[in-house]
Every structure is written in structure tokens, then in C-alpha cells.
Length: 197
Image (cartoon, rainbow, N blue to C red; front, side):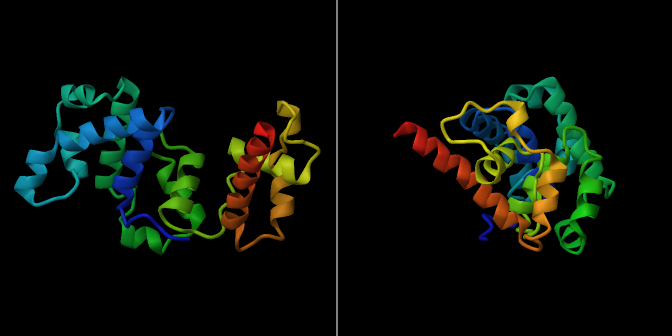
């Protein structure tokens, strides 16, 4: 897997929080506005990205003007505080940690759940053995590949596998569950293409 960049955990998780439950274009606009609002402070300090301290020190109005909701503002401030106190490890430290340790640390941050950390592990850390069993696309891809779900079927909750069923099959996939995850997502893409024919 190729990683897009070597962002710090703080930078990657800040972006993840902003993007949660938003359309990609809207989230990118808000993320861009937030970063731009720190341009002067970053230039003075020779930084390419605002620091956790910048996020803690900025006025609420700055976050609101960037487009962050009240809950997201609270989440990014908690991320900043937990970065400064070491709950969110540095990139060097996180590279030496197990997936389970990373999940344990990062889910202490407001607004960051297991799924967000699993996406971080796959896409930011390039971890090869992550299976996000609560991801809708992974569950649907599993049902299409190993269950009775057909591409033309309307998906119901009963069609989707339970995590235990997925984990039992995944025993064969270790240590490459992230690759299996990618294929399960692609199964959904292929089903959508089949529907459009």
C-alpha cells in the first residue's frame, strides 16, 4: 500500500474529525478554511500546519468561522489537549505500538471511535492486518462475497454479517486483513456497476 503522506497523528486525526459525516467537498472546504485561519501563526513559527497548541489557544469564533459545528470544535480541542498530554502519541511512538494499543489510546479522544482509528491504521499508517467489522461497506462486501446477498438485492440489516462471523473467516486472512478489507470494498463497487448495467 502506498501512503499519501507522513502526517502526524494530530494532523491526520484533525482531518478525520472534520470529515466525519460530511460530504467530501464540504469537509475539504472547512478543513482548508481552518488551516488557512492559522497561516499567519504558522508563518511566524515556520510551521506548515497548525500545532495542537494553536488549536487550544484559538478563540471559539475562529473555529466557528471555519465552519466547525459546536461538537466538532469540542472534539478538535480535545484532540489538541490529548496530543499535548501524550494520549495521542507522536508519529515515532505510534509506529512502535500495536494496533490494539493505538485503538486504546486514540479512542480516548472525543469524537474518535474505533472505526476512525481503523481507517487511520489502514490509510495513514499502512497497517496490513486491520478488518473494520463495523464498516458498512466491509459488511456489505462480505455479504456479497460470502453470503446470499446478490448485487440487485436491497440490503437489509439481516443480510449483513455479525462481526464474529467475519472474524472467524478472517482467521485465514491474517496478517493481511487490510488487503481483504480493500477487496470487500471493491465487491461493493462491482455490485454497483452490475446494477447500473
